[in-house]
Length: 199
Image (tube, rainbow, N blue to C red; front, side, top):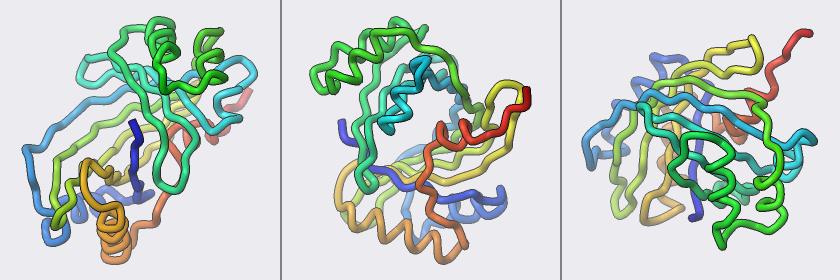
């Protein structure tokens, strides 16, 4: 599956709430969900996935385990594959067998994987419509984690569900301008890995 998303942040919580609650640009098209998310990112001992702008994670969403692989980004799109899982070995092994998985990435997923960082956050999310385009609109607030270091974060995320990529980008530009939110090009994993861990 090809994922297309735009992150806006960092944001102050009050900034994020005003933007998330503003229905002049994005009209609600479904019930809000609130998810308690706990994520651990893994890599090979040589950091081969990060070197190829790829990642694998095990995330618990309200107690449900999901293993996800994301491939190299291209503009705002990237390959995303996922499966239910309760541990990284089982999940990564299942993802490695997917026909869409690049062979070099499959080989890494079948090898040793070690935890490198993580994130713990609450996600508020709802489906929204902007003209002919359906968008998943999320507000994430919590902590990046690396070792014993924890750093708070707050951001918004818009993901294209169906419709026009140009419309998604226009809505993101409008939200960015009105609420003074920068576009963030770094993933949660990249920002968690940037935390400085003292020996």
